[in-house]
Image (cartoon, rainbow, N blue to C red; front, top):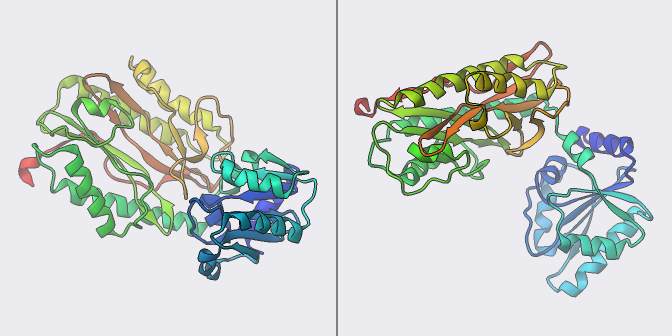
Length: 371
């Protein structure tokens, strides 16, 4: 039994669950080592509190079992949908699950799988298992942290290479394409944490802007929010530049956001509350008179998902513990003018906290004429 499976079983005991049903996704890969995807054919991992595990999967996916790092019984089914229910019923019977409280993942369990599960085990309750699944990956081990450190290095290398190619007259989409290529050349997995955000000028005031046809111009803010993946572990970074000389007001918010980022990082330490990190960053922005333009939480957890626990919000009083990894990413967004966000990836250690990301945080003028 792996440490990861043991952790799941302990959390199930703590929260009084008899079993768990897990779709392909981050927790599925974390526990089994297998990378499978949601599709029109259902795949579900069932884990009983005894430690027995069963996997219902399509016959065509059976070679995936060679990558499994936990012991499990497999229940493959052919393409004919009329045979699928039998595979689910056989899996429940093999594990002896009856009248059980079954933890499910509310963000990934679909009606497709739920119908099969309920028909196979009509006396079971399929219950929101967020308390189990959010805690499962909360504290990273040393090997996980090393992969995340490497993902940060890959991402930073890729941005520096991309900046060499950036010129006024390019579209955001063209710059984003160069960044994606640079990420792969620097060593990122093909499956990125998310599609990079490249936003310029007034578009940078939209925190989740999609790269589009807007053409980069001198005087613009140019915001990059991007990350890399190494063995399935992610980085997530934001830096903002000016293209030549930007208006004074935009430079001012850059200075404020840099200070807010520093305050948030300084507040992070063991036993500190997640809410205190948010308040530290937010207070800097509020004091500068831009509070209404900081429109999101200060950060989120990071690992094999781009967004996971712990969430760095003012109402989240989760104590920070060694091994937790999260972003600190305050921002100010002025509609019609532009926005600045500065984001780093922090690790809580036994002594304090340290950053996996180390590119300069100043909103620096990008002198394209020297490249």
